[in-house]
Length: 108
Image (cartoon, rainbow, N blue to C red; front, side, top):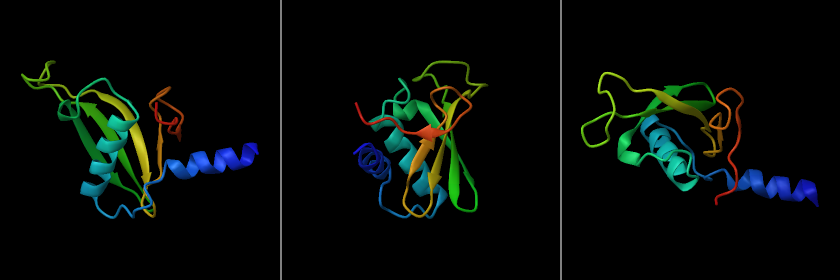
């Protein structure tokens, strides 16, 4: 029973859609950040820096400092990273501790 719950939980983190471009990865990162409440910042106050790896995209989620968002416009601190698997949009993040990547927690 526990294995079945883990399997269902892991599958729920995948979008089921291929993520083929950096723009798609940034869109997926924005959606996941908002839907899983990974940041208290509004989406328009975040930047998504995408790096293309062989089987996945790594997305750095940064604060975006503007007059509307606040903060020092000369900086864009990284908040956390997401790894998005290309074949199905599965996401893991290091948002919890800044070091270890783990699956997303179920949506609140």
